[in-house]
Image 1 (cartoon, rainbow, N blue to C red):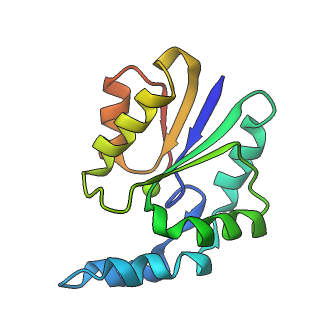
Image 2 (image 1 turned 45 degrees about the vertical axis):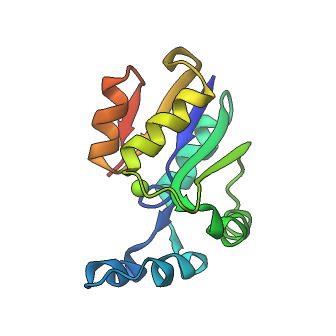
Length: 138
Ligand SMILES: [Mg+2]
């Protein structure tokens, strides 16, 4: 079975860079440039470790591909082990729920994905409606 984890809001605390996208105009490049400075969310990291005992860990994030090197370095530094890291194509600006629904469909049917963990209620409702077992991380 596969367990799928979101990154921002589940493993990484993005609150220190949130101000870049709360302003107008939003500065997404500054927002993503600072991913390496995120604090880890201990409870999320522990949940990954628990699930890794009998699940393949897939990380699925709406972060763009341009953040891959910084994201992988951060995950290594924080000791978060995974099998696959799926990021959003750099020019994909679709809503997170659309991107994640499409990415999950490419992984497999709901019955091969034991659990999806995400903090975004829009994503949670969409994926639950598609038949995935989803935990709303808060
Ligand atoms: Mg999130």
